[in-house]
Amino acid sequence: MNNVPNNKKYYKIGEISGYLGIKTSVLRFWEEKFPQLKVKKNKISGHRRYTKKDFDLIIQIHDLLYNKNFKIEGAIKELSTIKANTENEKILIKKDLFLDKDSIKEELLTLKQLIENL
Image (cartoon, rainbow, N blue to C red; front, top):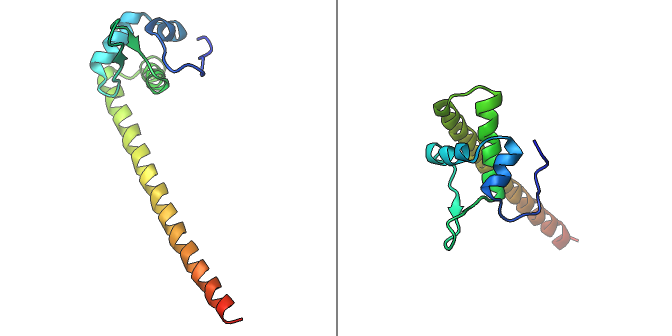
């Protein structure tokens, strides 16, 4: 695998296939099979434009299929599980932020009372 250029907004199908060492037809096949992979096409030329998010997802798919020996159906389920876990983590983080916000508010009220009592 070659180094991934991080400074690009969009990647071409040939760049991604070259990076992973797979044929472009494999990427087009994955687009049909994996509902998580929603690649946009240029309105004028019709060429696929992969974002960094798409690229990262394709790397995950490649890892599941080629390195971890998942079948396509299993990889789809695994990606759904990963996404669900990520969403749950985001909810927990937001909940923690709200708890912190409440405790900060409580501390500020306590400080305000202390100042008023001076």
